[in-house]
Length: 257
Image (cartoon, rainbow, N blue to C red):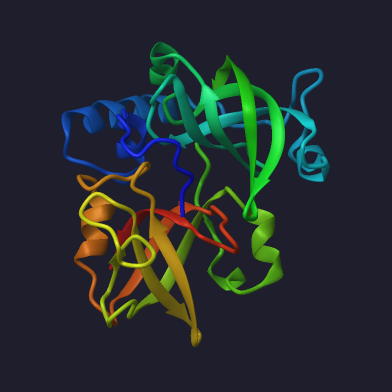
């Protein structure tokens, strides 16, 4: 599921394409920027500036209270109407920054790895904890989070402790969804090309639903195309962000057989 404020959005998906893989020139430029950021990575030493919360302090904060975090861009959804939604992380946890007002110029600076300071309010929507009404500062520093394998945590209470982190799932089997299809456009099959893709995968006899979020990984990205080529019974590995909607709803950015 996604929150919609407009029925038609004009999206700039540069970082999303880099995260999801694409043959487009824009994605190539973003991938190059991400590579440069990775080469320049100093890592996250865990030291926070004065007045900035640790991830533990952020996690313990009450909903609807102001929070201040320093974190690193990992991917971003499209820029539209001077705002953007950003997947970020430090070495201890993930922060989902929703609808943050930002100029196009600064949006373009937020390549994967870029350090930012964010002040906003800790909010929750259908189980997804996010930072809203946010302001930001671009800071010096780079960090690319490695994918954390959470396959063994599927179906367990501990999985939510990694909400919004960049994670991986290994050895998952594609299961039928809808009328025995391998994927659906939108959760109920009501969509068309370019909409979110929903698909079911199983592990140890339990089935889970994953998503390719079209605002993050559009129809021209490698992961979107890869999911459309899946067949029931395929065994796959995946990477993505551990988004939450009434339970785990990972936003997948990479699929390999």
